[in-house]
Image (cartoon, rainbow, N blue to C red; front, top):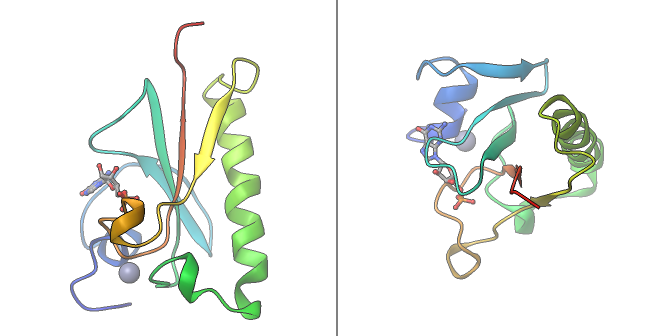
Length: 110
Ligand code: 5GP
Ligand code: ZN
């Protein structure tokens, strides 16, 4: 838990947020400012600043973020139509919350 980190506070339930899914290692919730009909964030409970800060010890959680992203796409019925899974990395990459999170966006009309 990092002081003054919004996603640490959300994961720790200090900032109330409806979780679509939670386990010991991660939480999943809707983006407050969606950029697509479906816009979900998959967030490790461990504070990691960005992709740049990953180490070998994080291999399992990174893999789990992607697998949960795939499952959430299925639950949100965008698996067949298609979706994007992505990380913004640091300011130039569009990152504004410096706690690692995987974006799942989709649900556009085809
Ligand atoms: P980034 O640009 O850092 O990759 O993405 C951060 C995302 O977090 C943005 O899409 C933004 O809308 C979302 N966000 C920021 N604050 C909150 C919040 O308090 N609650 C939720 N659910 N999403 C947030
Ligand atoms: Zn954090």
